[in-house]
Image (cartoon, rainbow, N blue to C red; front, top):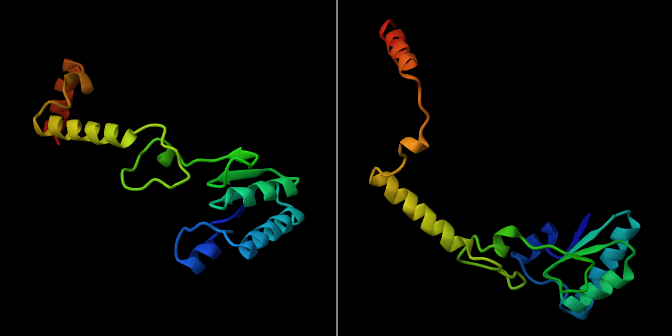
Length: 147
């Protein structure tokens, strides 16, 4: 599968993640690149962070499927990073991501409770521990005292 948009070559040239294909020339180059990739034998292409109309036109021109991530609804399929989708970070969500849940708050709360319970001796308790039969423990103590 090929990946059009945020390719490593473009990232290093531009110095970061930016929308590609916003100008007429850049959009035309993405179309040409997609057609060349299809001709080279790609079975699908990911269109990432490109204008929706450019992605739709590329999808219409290709016989192979396109998967969009930040490329609008005109692609054959969609991709969304799980971390963005469920809100695992509180600092940054890409413009094209939709947050379906706020797991960051839940995880932060759970970690805080865990830390407090460990500090206060409330976790782990007996129900969170494995046991050994008394006779096996006595044999264990005897075996280590001989060494």
